[in-house]
Structure formats: structure tokens, C-alpha cells
Length: 243
Image 1 (tube, rainbow, N blue to C red):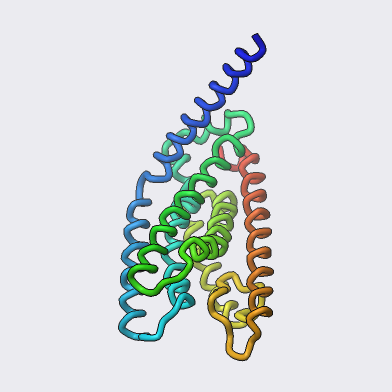
Image 2: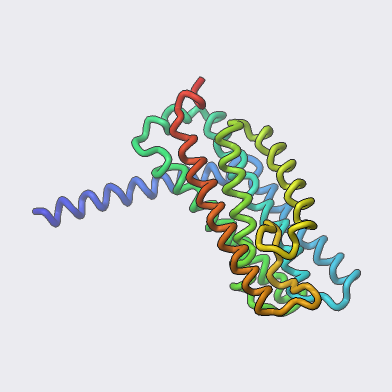
């Protein structure tokens, strides 16, 4: 009897997860997401052609650089416009009525966004492997995820504060430009968001650079968790979203 009840509860939970997953797939793929995917592919192709014609002796460091921007574009739309899409479709009130809203809906959605972004980035990495130069594809895709997910989680947190997709996009562009400016100053430290682990500076020991890269990934990982928790906490302030 107990086993039957347990199986029934498990089945109900699985059905709930599948329904939530199907809904969020519609949200993620809705609207302009496909255009961001196509834009990412176009940017990757254009940057690859520029690399081939302008820098004959390119390596994995250069490939990392041209893969980073398409990766950011892939995570940009679903994290920036997700909450606005919920508001525009007039289901925000329904979603806020679900117990533990932040865990059952947006946490699952963010996980799906990350998996989808990684899958597309992994595909782009194979394009770079066959079209540009050989390198460890899986390792490259994992390294790219740190700055991409850092910016994605930051965009999600900002969207819970701004509560408007276009406004969030403007804020994220300003933050991105500021981070790029700071990258010139912090280029040899682990604080650089756009740190390229494959680009070892001249006269720097490889072991030292590997330690800097490891600390940078830890720094980005911790920030991702902080941004994620801050965004999920903001989503509990129901009155701020349902005015």
C-alpha cells in the first residue's frame, strides 16, 4: 500500500515537472529567441572568417574569443525577457499562485536555459574544431560557460529589479561595456569576467596562469550563485510585480 502511494506521488511530481518543462520550452523558444540563435551563428561565422583572413597563426585562444560573444547572445534573450514574457502573456498572477514559485518555475527555467545554451555552444565548438583549429571541444565549452552563465545570472537578477525586458537589456549593455573596459585593467588577474584561460601572457609561468584561471572560475561561480539567489529572492516580492 505504501509503495503504491509513493509511486503515485512520484508519478504526480514527474507529471508536474514535465508540464512545467513543456511550458518553459514554449517561453524560451517564443518570440525572438530564434533570432538570437541565428544572430549568434552569423556572428560566429563572420568572426571566424575575419580570424582566418586576418590572423593566419591563430590558436585555441583566438577561437575562445570568437565563441564567447555568440555564447552571451544565446543566454541573453531568455534571461533578460523571461519575466516580461510572463507578464505579457498574463500568466504572472497564476505563476505567483504556485507554492514555492521560485523553485518550481524559474529555477527549472534557468536550468533549461543553461542546458540549452551549453548544447548550442557545444555545437559551435565543434564547428570551430573542424573549421578553424583542433582543440579539446568539451573543455572549451565548459570554460565558455563560466562568463556566459555569469552574465546570464546577472541579467536574471537585474530583470527582477527592472521588471522590463528592454530596460534590462539597456542596463546589461551598460554593464557589459563597463566590464569590457575593466577587462583591460584586470586582464592578468582572476577578477576579469572575460578572462581567457587559453591566452597566456608573455613571460608568465603556465602554472601561475593556471592558478589565476582556476581562481577566476571560482570567483565567477560564486557570483553566479549569489546573482541567482538574489533574483529568486526578488521574485518572492509579489507586490512589486503585480501592480
